[in-house]
Image (cartoon, rainbow, N blue to C red):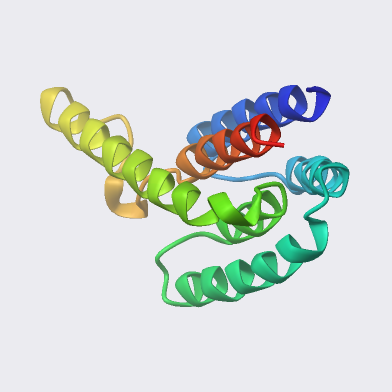
Length: 145
């Protein structure tokens, strides 16, 4: 339970800094790495998720090279994938896609409804859907253990 609460706190912090500064601080990523590693070790699937994390890292780096996501998003995807039981990884990716779509719709509507205070030219802060979809995946992993 401590891991889940710690990851929730860090997810909120990551989301806040991604919204406010469009950055995901490395100390946040390191603490998430620590907590997700400890979580997967305690639940017995660490060795399986390391391979998944490497694949996620490679895929995310390709997206980063093409300019679709930021460098902080790459790190966040890789470290959060360590904490989710392998059987829920695809579910988390689907959930993240849905959260991203909802966030994009909300941002587009709010920009049209009022004078936009931010620019969609840089995209949307993906730290929010990444953090909360993977956090829910960690919760699901703990509940199913």
